[in-house]
Image (cartoon, rainbow, N blue to C red; front, side, top):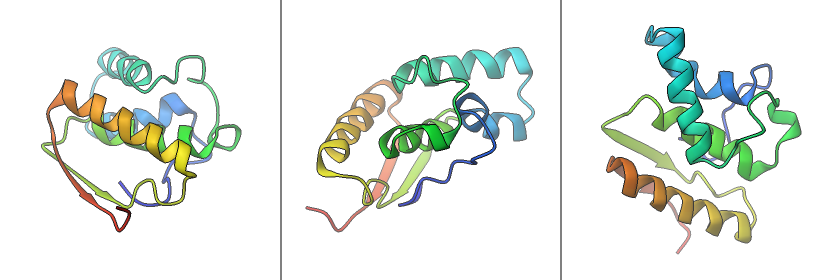
Length: 115
């Protein structure tokens, strides 16, 4: 996961999150179920059909995070993923990431210069 959100502006929240599953050939029904779960974990209910231009920076970062997590990687590399966000949003996303990690227990390598 990168410093700048890397969501595709032409894809909805739902389709952005499901992209990796789509590439891996996960059947549509299974993909939809996993995407719904990811949307709920990220607190993005009600925004499933929204395009990135209509979302806040923090919401776009949650979409990018869920797109990374939904494929169940063994290791998640995060390079300054919250660097471009304001302090309040950054702290909230740190808490959300920790909460998600507690559920998934994936290895996270977090590169940051922010103490």
